[in-house]
Length: 109
Image (cartoon, rainbow, N blue to C red; front, side):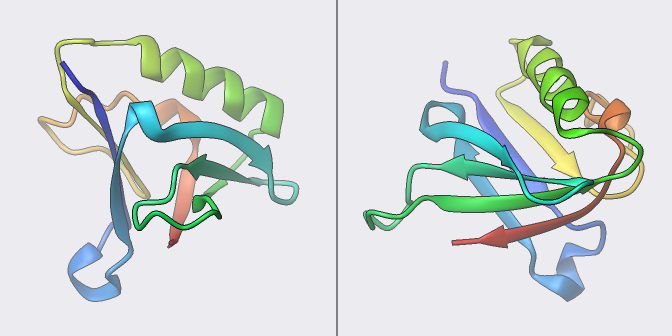
């Protein structure tokens, strides 16, 4: 079963900042400042450059964020869609990423 990562701003209906990628297109992550990380995915439109999702995280270094992200991706393999959003989790999304301290998500395709 293919698994997906869904990224969303807390108020996606007003910001339009969301994206969904299959985990198989994940290429890696790089630090993007003291409290932010760029997640790289294979381009959705066939371009040579990666699609990026910038995740601002509070109180976590890049190394801590990467470690927690790896742990979250290994949990609950029955859930095919893993939701990563800024703000608190809601009932039904599993809260798998609450410990990451996410406070802003920006998709760059």
